[in-house]
Amino acid sequence: MPHLHWLLPGQPRTINDLKQSNLASVRLRAAVALSGLLNSQFDISMGEDVSRQCTILTVGKIGGDDIQRRAAKWIDQISTAKASKALICLDYTDHHLGFESTMSAFYREVLRLVDVCICPSSTMAGLLRHHWQGPIRIIQDAIEIALQVPKQVLGSPITALWFGHASNVGYLKQFLEASFRPVERIRIIALTNDAGAQWFLRAAPVLPANVRVELGSWSVQNMLQASKYSDLCLIPSDPQDLRKAGVSSNRLITALALGLPTAADMLKAYAEFSDYFVDIRSKRLTA
Image (cartoon, rainbow, N blue to C red; front, side, top):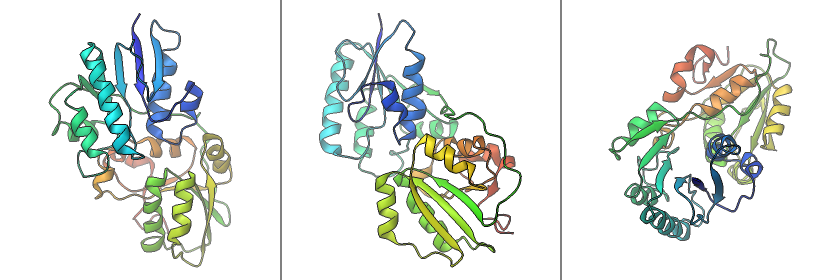
């Protein structure tokens, strides 16, 4: 019987653990894929310790925490699986080969061992093609919530929802300080993980006088609850930032699925949905 192991940071015990992760690459990819295999002819396992029985090894996002130890451990296990004739797949969701990060060296090394790469978008596949000449498959992120009824009327004061991993909090700060000048009062509910909340508090952004930010802990349920009290969704980013090259459209799709009018930066992965959201840098947002 084929055995698929998904290599992930930490020691998740169940698929439900994956569904609770604050990493979209875990929730919307690993959790979905492994859930789909539960009643199949596959045995499955997950986490940092690769099963020696695995015949298919999918390498997930390694993360920057304790990278030197983890990278060495992962490369050793991937090499062992490769020597045992396992099929090695890389789920490549962030373009760390396009700029130098703590994870870039790992991705350069792991490409030597990979049989096939998986990307969340055609844009990411195109970027990866500059570094990898083997087969690439495109599998988009899943939508993790049921579609909500679209909001039709704005409240007073307006409440906006922002949600994102700690890696996205800097874009929110930049937007609020440099670009956001609403005419009316606005309350922003910002949902992130603990690291993101602490970073935002330490950064102490200088906000416009009529803008108030309330920080909260992100979870799917908290996001759904906050969307009930929100009038719109904000997704600031930076299209020129190489770290955003090739990202999937999952945050935009989630915002639209929440039924919220959405203002977002025009990332390449968002362009095909341009009829359904407002460019966050345009005057239409504050008109």
